[in-house]
Length: 372
Image (cartoon, rainbow, N blue to C red; front, side, top):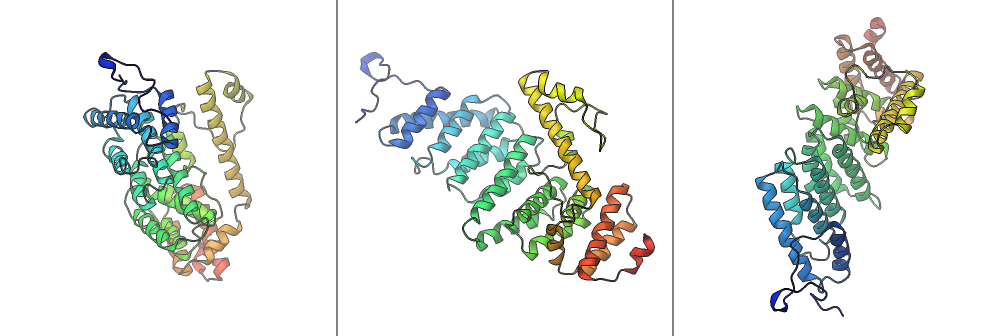
């Protein structure tokens, strides 16, 4: 068996002299050792736990300063939470509290690392989905696209995992209640995120119930055109991107975007753009350019599906069939169309959804034909 403290440098009196902080490599090694034999490495763990708490106290005083050690220690603690459940029982609340209070001020890398630690704790069952979801939605308001993508994909994967073996109706009702209440908030960003989650879960055949569809339907009356268009596209069978972002959001958050350089829809990629994306600049800049090209290709393909009618898939039809009051839905959307000052493409999308609703439910809406 291993003797605790063996192999450490020794100071005066032969007592072990431990470093207050471990390097990232040694933390990863210690992490594996703690998981394999928690009792033998308890002393080393407690040393790192004390260091983690001291770094967390410094964060509270200087949230905007760099804290690389805290990021490494938080990850270490999250991985060891199963080996030392009593010592780390408060870890989920501590990490969520740091993010809730200081996420806006802290460095983006630290913010993402702490969010990943919370996600890891959630995956290990150290906290409930309903506890983490409100925090993640508050963090959606931050101007960090990589963080938003990380959180969005986790939320989708988490809810799918909850319902993987069998539907967990009690948990679903709790999560849906939060998302539905978020849809009623005045904040456009929160509504868009809730809508993106509901649409993606419907597309993945997780939440296909009548209540979810009718909450999505209510979004067509939202004052934000972006929210309205996202809901209309859903009923035409077109989902959002797999990270919950729309193309306008991506352009705004793109660090490489230049004023006036927004691509015109339908433009083909030039040879120079392709060459620059794969052969010029640093590896990080090439990666950004390649992602930008991927978004342009996806956006163009999405527009073509809408214009060609390919978007009229079974998803949109089956959703329309679940409308509780299709006639009122069509009438309200038509009234919005009559008073709309949106661009032509948005108006045409409204016409398509109204027409589709009339066809699916065999409604009579005479003013539509006069309007057209």
